[in-house]
Length: 122
Image 1 (cartoon, one colour):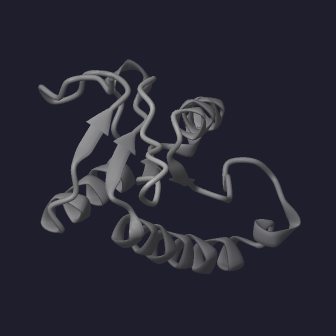
Image 2: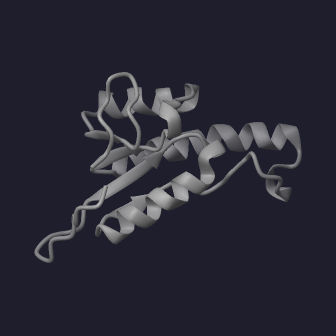
């Protein structure tokens, strides 16, 4: 995760971070490292696990979750590669679906921790 992706003659690569928001701090740390490596980072923007007026109402939270899932798939569409932030190898259902979607598009996928035989990001 520490090599520099920036090349002054071309656009920096775009990486999208995927992973459970239960690891919000780890997602933020991955964002720091990827940005410092010269990559444009797309990441989850809302942590529905933390109380907020926008999703205090359960019905509104359900609608927002569906919209955020669709928005994150669009971030995967835009990205050159996907980085799965998976401390301890954890991959939940939503992240598993994002991995399947990224694979269907042929996106390269890296992992911060080994999971299902995957090598950690470098």
